Image (cartoon, rainbow, N blue to C red; front, side, top):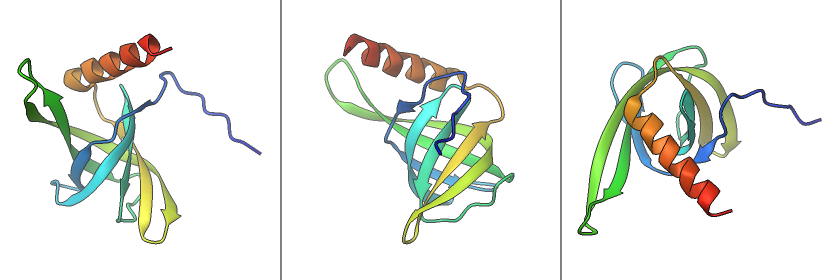
Length: 118
């Protein structure tokens, strides 16, 4: 039986490098998707649900000259769930403690791009 999700926002796929940890970012992974109030990450650590986490998201952006720049966005959150997805890989859901304006702008831009592709 499929579990129905009651979510306020659609998930937007966003595959970016991340660094994360309980008190400071020290482990590496990638983001999977994002909403204005949370994200899911893929990593090789079995994180503990209900624990605090700090995540640095390394957003690759292109400037007007088509050069790539990396913008680091740091967010704090709580680990809501953890799933074992394969040998040594886990996915985890993170709920942000407070909204991050830069991530909200990124989410809105990705959502607009997705709608324009329809």
